[in-house]
Amino acid sequence: MNTIDNNLEVIQSVSDFSLSETLECGQCFRFYKVNPEEYMVLSGEKCVRILQKQNQLFFYGASQEEVEFFWNDYFDFSRNYGELKQNLAEKDEIMGEAVGFAPGIRILRQEFFECLISFILSQNNHIPRIKGIIEKISKEYGTPLGNEVYGFPTSKQLLQVSEDDFRKLGTGFRAKYIVDAVKKVEEGKISQEDLSKLSTEGLREQLVTIHGVGRKIADCVLLFSFGRYEVFPIDVWVKRIMSECYFEKKDVPIAKIFELAEEKYGEYAGFAQQYLFYYARQKGIGKKSR
DNA sequence: ATCCAGGATCTCC
DNA sequence: GGAGATCATGGA
Image 1 (spheres, rainbow, N blue to C red):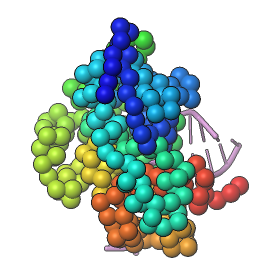
Image 2 (cartoon, rainbow, N blue to C red):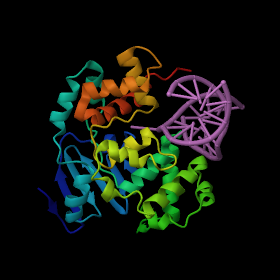
Image 3 (cartoon, chains in turn brown, cyan, purple):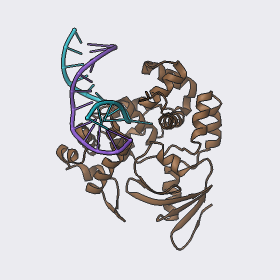
Image 4 (tube, rainbow, N blue to C red):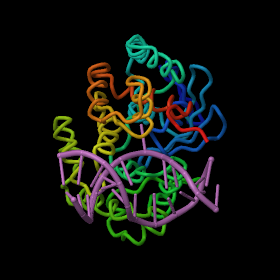
C-alpha cells in the first residue's frame, strides 16, 4: 500500500530486493549512485530518485501513479522472488552461493529500444565504458528531464544521426550497428509490439537480423526487455563460471552450456543467469590471475 | 604500458 | 561449417 506526501514522495515496502544489487549487477546502465542506499534511476524518458531503508523504498520525483504503473513493473515487484530463489538455490551448491551472494537482485523490465542499443554497445566493451557512452548519447540526443539528466533518445531522435556522429561519442566499430538498429526500428521492420507476439525463438530470429546483433545480445534483449525469463544469455563470465563449476574445464562448447542451463534451470534460467553473472564477475571466477 | 571487455562479423580453409 | 583474426576505445 502506498502513501504520498506533499513532496511527491511515494513510500513502498518491498521484500527480496536490494536497490544497489539490482542496479549494479550489470543488467542495466542508466543510474547514478547518490550514496550506497540512494540512486537516481532512468528508463527511457522516465527518471526517479530512490532511497532504500531496509524494506522501505522512498521514491522522489515520480507520481504515485507512475510508481504504481511504471516503476513497479520496471523492478518486477509483483513477482515472488523468495520462492523463486529458494527453488534455484536448491538446484546445486554454486547456484545457492550465487543467490546468497546477492539475494536482492531482481530482473528489470527495461525499455525496449534503450535495451537494444545498450546491449549492442556492450559487445567487446567494459561496463563502465558502456555506461559512459550511453550517457553521452543521451546528453547529445535525448530529451532533457531537468537536473542535468537526459532521457534515452527515441529511435526517432536518432534517425538523422550518422555513423560518424556516433563514433564521435566513442562507440567505435559499433556505430554502424546502431545506425542499422535505428533504421530497422524506424522502418517498422523491428517493432516491439509485433515482436512481443512471437515465440522466443521467432523473436530471437528477428532481432539477429540487425547487423551487429548475435545470439548473446538478442538473448539479453529477450530477457531484460521482453521478459522471456527462460532465456540464458551466455557471455564470457557466464561461460567461465559454468565451464569451471559444472564441467571442471575451460573451453566447453556453448551448446553444452545452453543444454545444461535449460535442463537444470528451465523457466528460471534467466534469473539463474543473472545471479551467476554477478557472482562470477565480483569473485573473478575463471579469470586468470596476474 | 599493456590487457581486455556482458561479441559479432569477416575471412580463410 | 568451424577456427582465427579483426574491430575502436579507454578504464583498469
